[in-house]
Amino acid sequence: MKNNRQLRFSLITTLIVAVVFLLAAFAWRHFTPATANAEPRAGTVIVAGGLVGDDYAPDRPITTTFDRVDQLEPAPQYTPERRVPPRPSRPSAQRAAQTETESPTPPLDEDAAADAAVAAAQDESNASLADADNDTLSDTVSDARDEASAPAPAASASPADPASVKPGASGAKIQLFGTVEFKRPLSSLPNWLDLLKRNAKDPIFIPGKYFKKNVTWDSFKEKTQGKSPMELLRYVNAFWNTWPYKEDIVNWGVEDYWAIPAEFLKKSGDCEDYAIVKYFTLKELGIPYENMRIVVVRDTVRNLAHAVLAVYMDGDAYILDNLSNAILSHSRIRQYSPQYSVNEVGRWAHLKGRKVR
Image 1 (cartoon, rainbow, N blue to C red):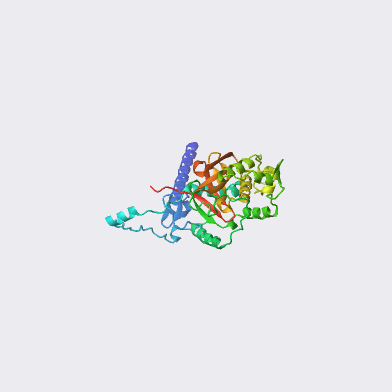
Image 2 (cartoon, rainbow, N blue to C red):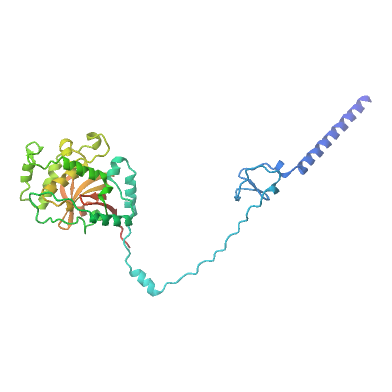
């Protein structure tokens, strides 16, 4: 009998405790503040009025703690603007005909401009060989006017002036390798100005100067007597192409170095050094320096920078290349994309043109 009483007492006590626990849980769930039991969800922030998910971005995120959401200032409401579509205009037949007959200036090839920009980002070797000109056209025109007022260098005395090669503005009517060119001042190419100064201090085109065994400047010059301008180009090109090709890193320990003819005689050089020595040789033999340019190109077949000499005569531009003894018109060479050209009167930036359909 006593055991039954103890069992009933235990069951009653257990039920009372369970009821009290349930009541406490119910009261905690319904009467505590909203921010106390609102756990943050992933991608959810608090704004005035409640919780918002990733589909809405409030103007001001919450970075401080608040006891109640109502303490927040209301976020500005987004009200879409009404846009009235423009009324379509109908051009007259006369205006359409006028627009169709206009001939706009051919736009420049964007790929060539990109090549110029990419060439400038290369290492120092290619940067000086592929120095793309990124200045605006207005600056180019103003600099070209300043350049026109500068005095031109004095022409060197020549033993024989080829009759068919008359001095003039090189490339005035020739689009070298199919490009559009813009003249720039020589000050934009300090390597070339430094070369001119060094060459003036150490000339090689003087009597008794040996070029190679049994060949002096005097004997070399004698063999050019009576040659036509084209034969002169072939003779000079083939003679200097007998020198071995050597990279600047081997000769001078740097990625790029422009050698004067005296340095080329001692150590030979790379592509631009061949073009330089041919330029000064033809100048001494009577070809006007205004009709020649050292042209830095991009060889699209080998995908590398290169340099050649262009000689303007008879309404054409002929290319002297250390890769070949043949003298070809620029129009027959398709793999070269010129970046810039230079002589003693100026520098020209070259960009590819694009045909207007």
